[in-house]
Length: 108
Image (cartoon, rainbow, N blue to C red; front, side, top):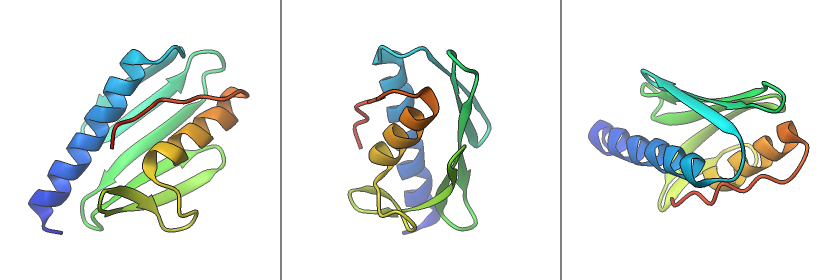
């Protein structure tokens, strides 16, 4: 994957997450600052942080349960540790931190 392809894939994924957050029933705020997207669960103030790691061409997710490194494997991002795709991983860590099932329905 070229750097241009990586940048396009990660931008598309971050925008899809933002769109899913706009449409979901959960009170989850988000803020993008440079290469970092911070999701904040309003019920308890906990955060999940997504950051692009251009040098490695990865997407990193930081949550209470740990840090996850995802590489792009068509058709989307996949975690090398858990084997989960990005939507599954995000739903899981958000659900763990919310204390009930969260489903963002992210288009990948």
